[in-house]
Length: 368
Image (cartoon, rainbow, N blue to C red; front, side, top):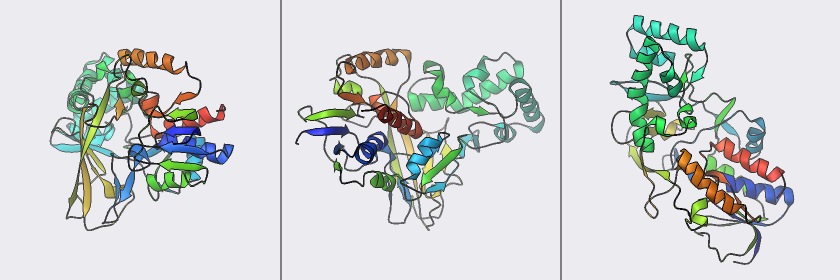
């Protein structure tokens, strides 16, 4: 490979966003490489033989309240409006999840449900969203009963499957991602803008990369012998530095994608199984873009520990000790001003898609 002025490692959303800005705003050549055989990273999707849009690496619903980010991506796609509503299998029935006032009515006898709802509203206020850790810390007999029920049925075993630990062992921000909603709203997210690219994430990112200044090289792992003036690395920061201080821990996922010869498998796009089975959820893909077919495709999602050479990194594990370890690598990174780390793996942060884009736009706008 000849010397690049701008070399981006990783053709996921962070890398693609930066490549687009360099090519279209700076009008400079940029090379983007990826070890996989496709662009779009974990957002990669495709249409199968049944014209169903498959999210290969699990459900991705874009949501943001940042108009700048929404408007930016809207330059490359039209949107299919989509408000994610998740159900969870609890005590033999499915209930709205994240847990809300409707979930309470679905889970308890009428009088008990009404008492719990009235207490929640009087203490926290209607429309509020609170974490399970907040609810568990409140000293009240009725709320303690509710907190223990939700914790035991919806959180603790789900966390053990998803993260390999309990909610208390992780940064509180993780628990806040699945709040308890004190209203009947069953939208999983509360952002102003929510949707899925009308033709899929892969097509959106193909448009972002459609510039003669951009060279894309797939099946191309990063090699330190590559020559560049500026490197933008969205891979794992610890691997870049040859694990000098040890490995940063991650959780991984495995997907069992199955086709069924029936119109629908379940009555919702995502059904979580916090207390049953080894998988955490079942996703039915035809709901994403309302694809019509006599067949359907679902994926069973199995979390696991990340092991180098065996599976892929998905989720950084936010704990105080992992933050300290990451900061050691960050100090190393600061010693080379021509190498920049971005993305969920480079920054070791549990980014949503909009936050990943916002991070890159802010980085670019400061001048590179």
